[in-house]
Image 1 (cartoon, rainbow, N blue to C red):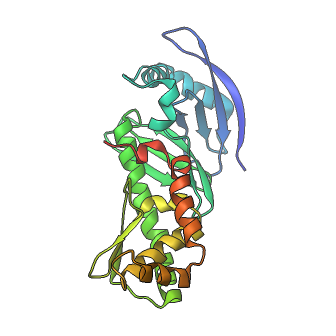
Image 2 (cartoon, rainbow, N blue to C red):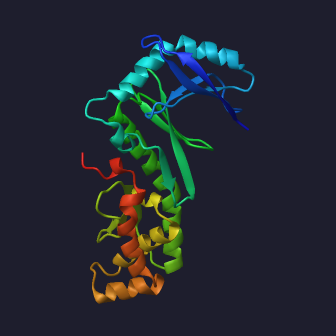
Image 3 (cartoon, one colour):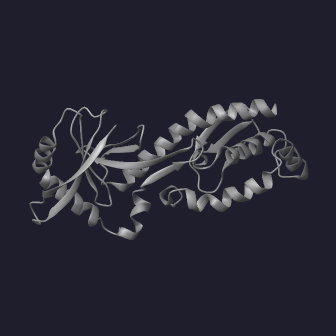
Length: 253
């Protein structure tokens, strides 16, 4: 079990006190300083490390901490009101039933990586670069789509008795899926933000296109054989998308 307690550190440039949390974690192997875009500061320490060592660690890094907090506050063209658009605070991946807080850990490197832990999504690296953060999160979603949606697609194909040649995943703004004349199906990785029944409808929709390459009455009749409430699901999918998908994933570049 992890535990958390709050302390204060004096920032050297402004001579102001900044509150920070110390969290003891059995999974931590070293001291780590984390700063969120909203200005929350946390020091994660191994179980055998004392709070006084954490205090010394953050005092040693107080200058970096203050400069980092100022960078978050003064990024050109980014206001506090739009902060979640640039740095989402959580991913609610309803397909897998996981709501994951996003934690940002700055490192003096040129890359950004995303790792899923038992409790959160840890975004590590050059996190002051919003575009790099966005790309790393996109790459994470594509990886998870392959891991979670591809087996589900095989399951739905077997249930319907409709085969396909291959499936791939992309991040798209307007389409949930597509099917080519060669039975190659493409699915939107953003389906991870929706419950399994929504995803099942999209998969059935594309599988039915392997037999009916149109939206004729025959096509919808075939869809209804495998998904009776397709009309509701199709409407709900588009209606709910704005509320469940982080804005940066659908914003035009």
